[in-house]
Image (cartoon, rainbow, N blue to C red; front, side, top):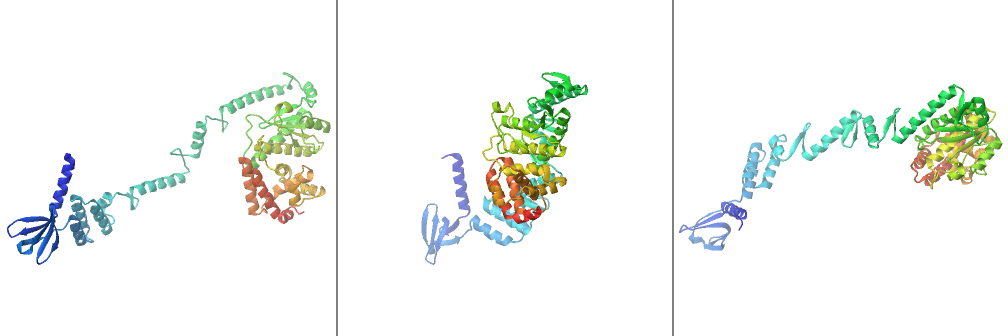
Length: 477
């Protein structure tokens, strides 16, 4: 027998002996164990050697002793409500190896005195503000308190540390290997592109100050440049932050239209709350001098035969060998009415913006009415100066079609494009019903995410049909 095990057995036997009943005979002999029966004729006692039946006449005395568990029960009843006596009972139970009973005694102590610190501590409680809680609860409450305190200070949790939103933004972007340039986070390639772009622009501005323009690999005088740029195949290129404005209608005109195109880009960015990732490229927008040039570029880049010659269009996504290295380009025509030209440049940029958000290989694209409608809204309907004109023009070309007809047979004509602008204007107005606005927001979110687009727009079209009467009242149609 191993020493530790032998010691344990010995202790158990001693504990049993200490709690044993004792039967003493007339001749002085003693039997220790548990009395299991006692009558006028006999006393039956169970010892560790077996069961012994003794004649009552031979028994001098019988001493019945309580077990530790029984004694604990008796002591507990006697100490009920007495904090000191109950704590002493805990000490007694501990000394008699009664672990469960010791915990019971401690619980009795805190029932009698909820703020008994020693009993609380022994039971694993800790103080949190003005109450006792378990250690696990203390950990949770402390974390919750810290969270509320930090959020009240405007801090956010990032990777286990509290920091300001600006610090989090910096940490996230630095982890991506990005750098901050002019207040914006960009990757190193973007930074290099921006630096090269700025260098090129600076050089161009210096030459332009001297009346020189870059033609065929060299800087030439304005008169020579103007003659060269009049060729639709070699247009003047005005480069902005987001748009590459090309035109064969003169340098001054190109610079002015670039301002319009950049403004259109910013409006589209504001409308969607996001922008296409261009990887340093710019939106190519061509404003040609006349219809002949318009058709020439349209045929060259695969324009839809149904496109109106007097409206902007965007080329399909074609292989580079079919587009001269341009993945997508908007083409529109110069008009003697300057404001009308600006309208179509606006449309060209916004339409390209929407298509680029969808991506070049969108298997789940937005419907054409949406693309044209957003473009029409931004260029015309949202401008108070053009709202009445747009409404009157819509009526002149046939009015707003029934929703079923409009969505079921859409074609890129002036009537449909103006109708799409009206739909968007209605959604953006305070007259738009909440359920329609929700469907609209869900559809735009799906477009930006690139998932479930057509399904979302089918649901949106049903919502428009549901509120067709309110829409017509809004447009006074």
